[in-house]
Image 1 (tube, rainbow, N blue to C red):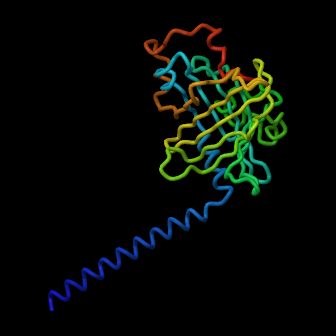
Image 2: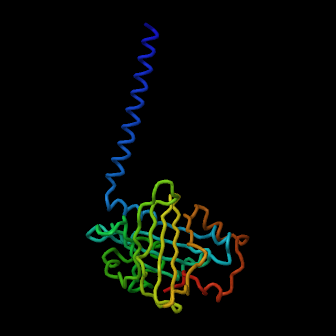
Length: 261
């Protein structure tokens, strides 16, 4: 009788475990299905937000990459729910002097496209008003209604898809075939690629091409890799022992996407 009882208890325990496993799998599946189109847009916007640096990449390959500070923060929200972010890049030595300022807009992809998030880049009508936007108190920045009014020329759009299981990224995508018009440094069009990584890194790769398809600006080796700033970032950056020699200005500019306008 004791043996039968133990066998029954063991069988019942296995059955309960199986039910819990199946229930957990169904819950995960349901959660995945319940992720709305707007949830994806919000997640991409949140992943882009914050202070990130390409310091590690610049240390590994100083001939091809610079230590760039990328700073992004929420700026406004449209009536349809689209998230508008302010984005700027600066050399880490002079974060108060951004060389690139943009407004980004994240929203769900149009239903006819096979993607999850549409991320568009816009020029700013008065960039000087937005310099160091994210570093300033909210009452000393352009307010959301002003931001919406200052959205300027559309520059690029990237269509992002959720990454397949097993990949290091959460979302990845690129500009449509043929890219977008661009005239900087002899280019006629440009392309953009973006990956949102699981470890909160952002990988970006912008390149410009001429009429013959020759690359005339941008990195040739691979994307820039921006990692979230550690809490000690500024103290590390300002240490005299951590200051590498400045590269010549002509090398800094030549072929570098970060200065593309």
